[in-house]
Image (cartoon, rainbow, N blue to C red):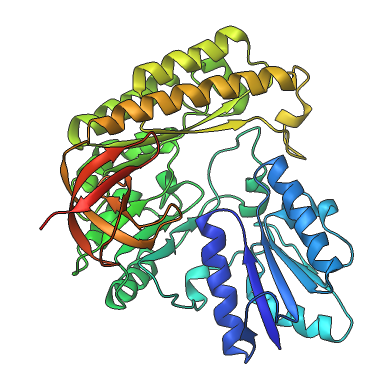
Length: 424
């Protein structure tokens, strides 16, 4: 039996895909390209309405082309009605270990629909085998679910409340990845900031264990919410001082207005967000700060939007992921009455996009002429060899060995990436 896996969304989904692939190979299936596949596993994302619509269209395309499709990922939890009824099986994120059973049932003309929530079933995914893909980067999930209850978020319907994986298992996976030659370890979670709160530990202690592993590698810490990061701030900054950790912080603020943050169910203030940023910048050189903003949240007045603009001008993040609010089924925010008209949301989104490009360009210009250490990842989408500086800035080189730490001089900058050349 020949199977193709098509994965969308976050690094968690990519790790889930590697687990399913390992289970398929262990059971004797072939994992092949799309054209030669008998079955396609659609590992879906449903974080935004446009993404969900794309998932639904893609499932239909595959079915219309004659493929047999099994849907996994977040879409079955968030909006199962968007899934074409012709699919051969549906598995939720807690049921990926049942992929073999889903195919076997489909072969007998039956359909496995298993979309268990976090209350019904909890599996430790680090105990599921993984395939070792060729490359520089290895994703290690450290937990699933979160402790927040954001009024706009549908992902929590799929991933549930926090389940932290055992530190020993995480360290074991990192050790094995480093031994196999991976140079970048990406720690993945819905919210790395609350890691360990349910099992009596925290992210800083986990980082200390990982950085003590022998070998030359770098750690990219995934997104952390401000209300959880602040609880372990001093320990976290101390852990970040280790040179194995990229000087990279993904800290989503979502709005620069405290009233909107309350409506979003975000349990922190703008002032607390700024305090975390100040402390990190005080102790971590060349911090690459990424944040997220949702524009057009219900009730966002012009004054509230301007508060967000002023926050961005004060904080000046290296990168801002700007999203237009889209109501997700089953969320509190989808039922709020004071929705913002679409044209105004687009207008605000475009303004913030222009502002972020301007700030990012000004920040990146400071790197012009600097010599920096870079980990090369491989062939870039823009040509050349793509790599990451030690504060996780994207850099393009005309040529370089792949999977190596190299010394580079920055020769040109844009608002989204740097360009450089090898230094002898």
